[in-house]
Image (cartoon, rainbow, N blue to C red):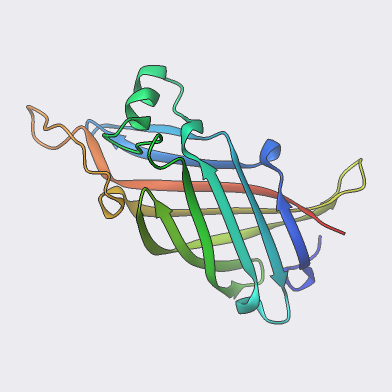
Length: 182
């Protein structure tokens, strides 16, 4: 297995073998999980100067999927993502800091609807492998928590027993397989 120091060049996210997921507390007692099925992104990696690396990701908001069509329709509506008015979510990196032999913090601007805020995602480098088709793949896993209200997603319903139906905090969980470009 190679190390973070070996990663150089341009990589493209393989959407068929990657996941951008989420979880949010529902009714204060359980978590709803799901993800976005359509996204694309590139990373220009610079092992000698990690801060010069650049990552850009675009997610199709309409690809939101929690496994429950009625919930998905509600989240896609103006109460939450408003996919007709805001068809994409974007992330553009602003910094990369190596934090360990196989870990790094990816900082950047996340835009949901018309709101942009900086976030930092701690990532673990899983490794690099050559697939049967000759592609060099690098794997990464990361997780961070955002507050959906920061992005203008404020709909909620009070519970009779106290608390709210949907938590403000949403955990983003990301698994990336990226293919090195020649």
